[in-house]
Length: 327
Image 1 (cartoon, rainbow, N blue to C red):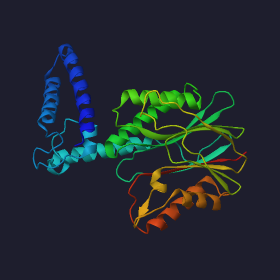
Image 2 (image 1 turned 120 degrees about the horizontal axis):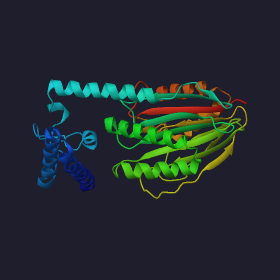
Image 3 (image 1 turned 180 degrees about the vertical axis):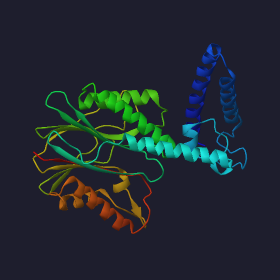
Image 4 (image 1 turned 90 degrees about the vertical axis):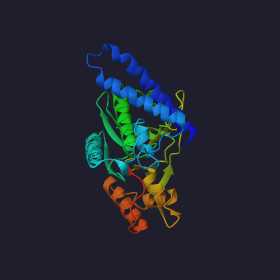
């Protein structure tokens, strides 16, 4: 295991140990806390002896995403008992249901905009984030977001839930796009491990067609207007990398019939036979469907991607979100 990751896990375990030690004197029944303290000490000891992340049964490597979610695990998935495997399957099913419940209403129409999205995890849970939030203050605004967190599996889905909660809480305070991006970055940086971050597109769309949009290290959204396609490239680093990160915005005005297309790299970086799908193909497809509804744009992207993959399963989570000005 890379030394950098071990340093991150050591810091995380040390912090857990301190919290446990502080909590034990206040507990009436200390048995569970004492047990967890022994587990943490055992993980630290394995780290000191150089076999942290090694399965105690088969001596193979423990899955990195499981260590990221719970650094005290010491057995790989293949060596778990049937009961333990069923418990993990139940947790994954529950996490998938929770993640689905967080998704916004599809085919939303609000403040002169209509929207459609497609959300497709590559596994039981997704590391992609997709959101639409209606603000009722003043003339009304539609907040929209699409992101991709680092890592995969259950650990990534937990970070998506954290990002969802942060943005909903901050959006309710009516922050500007720049302020919300900065606050999300700071809070995410302070509350997660340094290896955890997210690329993120966040924007606010007004009834007049004006849009402010921040691209924090994400693949470029596309502004589709009368067949012309304008990519909106990154205006800052991914959120969660540096606590004092600064962000700027694109300011654009959409006319009725214009569309914004957001997507995750599960589309643009899809591979088959060593060939990448690519940003240019996304832009060309968007241009050909400039007059289409949001659902038709998304459906066309999905159909073209499936033709490109020729039956091969997607290797990454896939999310698309189209917003069209209708008045």
